[in-house]
Amino acid sequence: DLIQDLLELLLLKPESNTIILPPPQTSATPKSTTQNNGNGSTDSTTCSPRIDGATLIFLPGLGEIRNLSERLKGSRIFGKRQEFEIIAMHSSLSPADQKRAFLPCRHDGQRKIIIATNIAETSVTIPDVVCVIDSGFVKEVRQNKRSFTTSMLVTDWCSKASAKQRQGRAGRVQPGICCKLYSSRTLSTSMNDQAMPEIQRVPLEEICLSILASGISNNCFGFLQQAPQPPTEEIVNAALGMLAEVGAITMHNADTNSTSVMQTLTPLGRHLSKIPVDVSLGKMLIFGALFDQSREGRGCLDPILTIAASLSAKSPFVTNVDDAQLAAAAHKPFKHTSSDFITICNVYNLFRKASMPIGNGVGGDTSRSFSSVQGRRWAEKNYLNFAALMEITDSRNQFLDLLIQIGFVKRNSSTAMLLDSRSRNNQNNHHEQNRNTSTTTDKNNKILLHSPLSEKTAKVVSALICAGQYPKVAHVTKPTGGVPNLSYKKERVHFHSSSINHKNNKLESDWVVFHEKFATSKTYISTTSPVSPYSLLLFGGSVEVKHVDRKVNIDDWIYLNASGKTGALFRTLRDGVQRVLKEMTNDMIVDENSLGGRVVNGVVELLAYE
Image (cartoon, rainbow, N blue to C red):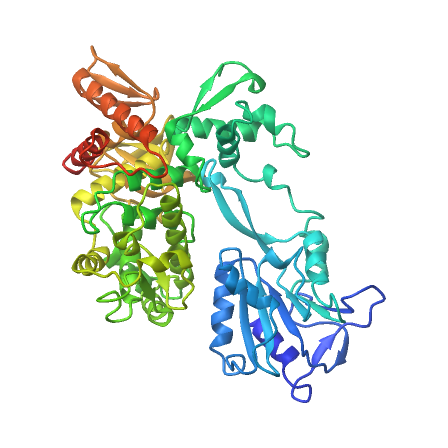
C-alpha cells in the first residue's frame, strides 16, 4: 500500500497531488532523498514534481516482486498499459524479460515501473531511471540453525553500502531522486556498514563438493583458508560432517586436525556436486528420480519435487488470521494422518488442480498453465498462502530442470506433465519441445497428479524423505495410554504444535524423521513423518550387524531388531544402490531390465510392501 500510494504521488499529474521532498542537498546525484521517519510522514519542504522517466523499486525477493507487480497491473491507475509498463527484474526470470528494463517504452508517453531485487544494485545502469524507491530490505542465503547445516533465505535490512548503491541508481545520466522507506535511525542502528561475506554466513557443503569435484584439492579446510576472508574451522567442519553423514564424502585421517584431514567424493557426492541445492534436498531429489516407477505418473518423483520445494519455501498455511477455527477447518481435509510432508503434497496437488484452466492439457499442451486468478481465489478460500504455493511451483520447475541436466530424468511428454507453468507465459524456451504431444497417457497423468498418494507410493516417498533428511531421526517411546516420548540421539525432544503429530499417540512406527529442530522453552521438532525400520536400514548411516544379539546398529545410536540374515540383505541392497549411482552418467538412465534396474525395482517393492 505504501509503495502504491507513493507511486501515485510521484507519477500522477502535479496539479492532482503533492509530494514531500527534503531540502536541497549539496552532495552529488541523486539530488534529493525522501526518508520516511517511521510513522508514514516526512519532514522536509513541499514541491509538486511529476516523474516522467522510469521508476526503479527495490524489493527483497521474487514473491514481493510478483505481489506488487500483480497489484499494480490490476489497479485502475497503473493497469493502463498505454501509460505504464510494469517490468520485473529477478535472477530467476528469463533474459528476455529482464532485457525489457533497458529498452525504450513501447508507446509514446508511457513510463516504466521496474521492480527489482538487488540484481539491479550494482553493475547495471538503466539510463532513463530518475526515481528510486528503496524498501531497504534484501534476501540473503544464511545458515539455518533450526535445521543444522541447511541454508535458508532470510529477509533482513541491507547494508549501508548497498543502500548507497541503490540511491546511486537514480539519476545516473540525469537528475533524479531516491525515496527511502526506512528512517535515518534504522540506517544508523540496524544496517551494517558492509554485507557479511557469503563464505562466512552460508553452509559450505556445496562449496566443499565443488572443490573436491574439480580436483583442485582434497583438503577443503586448507584450500578455503587461502580466501581473503576465510570461514572459521567450525563452519568448515560442520559442512564436512554433514557431507559425511549423508554419504557424499569419505574422510581420511579423521582423528587428526582439520588441516590434514583428506576427503574423497562418493558416487552420490559426484552427482550432488552438479546440482546447486542443499545436500539434503539434493539427495532426496536424486533418489526420487532414481527410484521413480513413473508408470503413467504414479511414481514418487512428483511428490518428492513438491516436498523438496516446500522445504525451501514458506509454509503455505495461513496462521495469522482472525478466525483460527475457520482456518483449521479449511486445512483439515488436506491433512495426512501422520505425515506433514505428505500433507504438503495434498495441498499442492489440489492447488494446481484448482489453478488449471478447464480443458488444459487435453489434446494440446502437456505442460500445464496455471491461472493466477483461479489459484489465488482457491488459496484465499482455504486460508492458504498463494505466494508460498507459487514459490513451491517455481522451485519444483527448477529442481526438475536440474535433474534433467544431470541425466537423472529424461526430457519427454511424461516429464512435461511434471512441469507447472503459469499462464503468464514465462516458461523457459527449452521446454517448448514438449508441447503438442498430448496422449491418452498424458490425460491419465493429469488426473493422477491431482490425486492423493496411494498407500504404497506414500511408503516409498516416506523412505526417500528419510534418505534426504537423515540423520534427523527421532526415537518414539510409547507409554501405555500416554503421549509418546521422543529423543534425538540422547536429547529429549517434543513435537511442535505446528506438526500434525502433535498429540498423536497412534504413530505406526517407533521412529520419525523431521526437518527442523529448535529450542524455545523446550526442544522441538517440526515437519515430521513416521519412518519405517526398512527405510533406516536402506538409507541410514553405517550399519553394523550384531549376529549374536540379533540387532542392527546404525551409527551407534539407532538399534533395530533384525536377524543377521536380514542385516546382510540390506547391506547388499545398499551396496547395489551405490553401484547404480556410480554407473550413472549424464546420458544414462537406469534400464529396468538391467542389474541396476532390478536393484531399484527390488528396493521399491520392498518399501512398498513392508
